[in-house]
Image 1: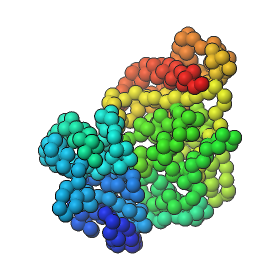
Image 2: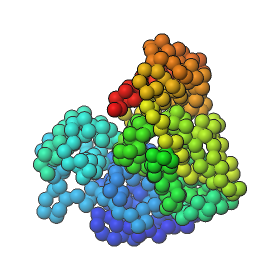
Image 3: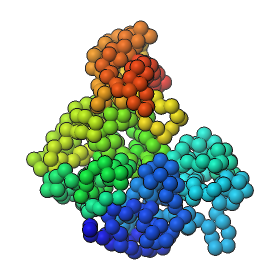
Length: 156
Length: 292
């Protein structure tokens, strides 16, 4: 067995240390070692975006990052979004617009939308659609998701 | 995923020494968007992943209007299209970086990795070829440079020898009245692999009525991306006209030797080479004309 890597990182603002095998993806570390099960495994090859998280300010597919790679870096996941008292405006907008059905893709869409609005607080519909192209949803037909992101942009 | 060791290399010489020692069972990890998938699917036997992203030399992104662009092998796509000077100087390369995967892929995947993965359909390679890019390679026997058009030797195969790594790409400063363009055909709007890709660069005369020189390159129509040398040479010192561009497009079609697969038939791909070559040339010409 390969040597385990000792990783110290920041997840949702808190310092976290863990041991992982080099072959474990960031997604596996989040879900199986740190019990942050918000990010979902869909395709596990970078097509579906269900595992989207923000790594040092950039949107990434956590299935395509090794856990060992995030030493010294900062990760934002869906668990860090809401305050204890209230949801994040993007989460509110998803609820208001009925932008989810089964919910598997939702954490990925919301993190992807957050990365967009952090960078571009007033995107056009065209920009939202292209930005979210790497997130797949088989329930909603996307329209409600796009409306939710545009609503969240105008609400913040 | 199969078990392997992970090493975070800090210098080029450390990465080269490790790669030389471990041989075929070691791979360089940059963005990981191809390599991690290949490891997970068991498509590569792999005992070592050597991460190069901590090495300063492979993170260089430096454009100087005298010396051109130095693009470190691990620079992700988003950094390239976020740089206005690079977008102005090398729009054909920027076209490719904006269409590789989606936002999350572009946050990690880079041009150097796209080249080293050596897919015949890689979007970055035709624009690198038309922009006269060269590869700065370091190995156990020192440094060498080769042109990008000589880098890919087959699907997934490159000119890199034992222990050699791609450190950076160098692209010359664009000439006056020049521009570049890349496009591909896919059946969707985004998030797809090229059925055919075509890149073109042109240098026009001062009046922007004649082509001084042009370069055309094709993707996904042969085991490697192709430089269409004869088609390019047909445009040397030619007045801009539909006939001249048609002639070059036909010459480009003549060197395509595509296969039929789930993405398209050989016949469709050969047809697309003509269409996309015309569009790439006209796109590059229009960009020169649109520049004051």
